[in-house]
Length: 301
Image 1 (cartoon, rainbow, N blue to C red):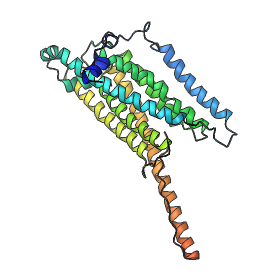
Image 2: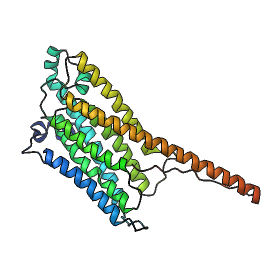
Image 3: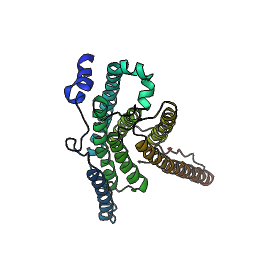
Image 4: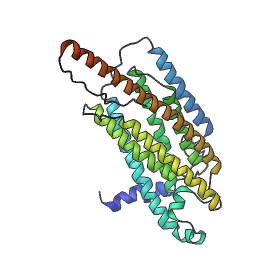
């Protein structure tokens, strides 16, 4: 496939160019659908957890988690490429207008002009990103079926991701281009790594997935600061009310994740300290050298 063909199917196809976010034409575009789907996701997760509460053995899922990770990695990479090509096409087509309003491409990435409508190339890929948030929730059910601990943070984080991606479309919210680029780039790496480990290959000897999420949340904070600066310095950004809600939700997720990250780090240190003390006792008793394999696994979130 040539670059010209790839560009056509990712940014110049009529379906992409003529896309318009509409409550009557776009599947999943109503507020009732949004809240119903989030509530259903939470209730199904809790119900499945209760049904399997007394079961101690995990339910074998075979290659399903690995295939899901591979699919999500490829989908994330496709969305990243599509919105990158689409953003470049939008910059090319509207550059003449930006010169009149002194708008730069960097400013547009962070701050949509007032009056921006949810239509065209960029919003098509934003819609695809919104739909993939529902596929992302399948990991919760995999976790429950494999009898791993389900956390409030997981349910909250997945629900918030669905809500925020809906707000991006509903209010033509600023920041969403960079938000999607950052999220899909990180997720393509994270899900690629999960597929790598799911098929039995060696995992990293540090919390790779958690560190990737930390990088993503840190980049989001920097972008939110940029949106706020442009809003007050350049005469306003579109969808600033939705952006405010987005910022509060992102801050909440960041605080919860920091709490989770610190607790995981402290647990890992206590575990390694206990191992070290046990080794010293064994060496004193048996005088036999013992090799300890470091805990290289991530806490799945």
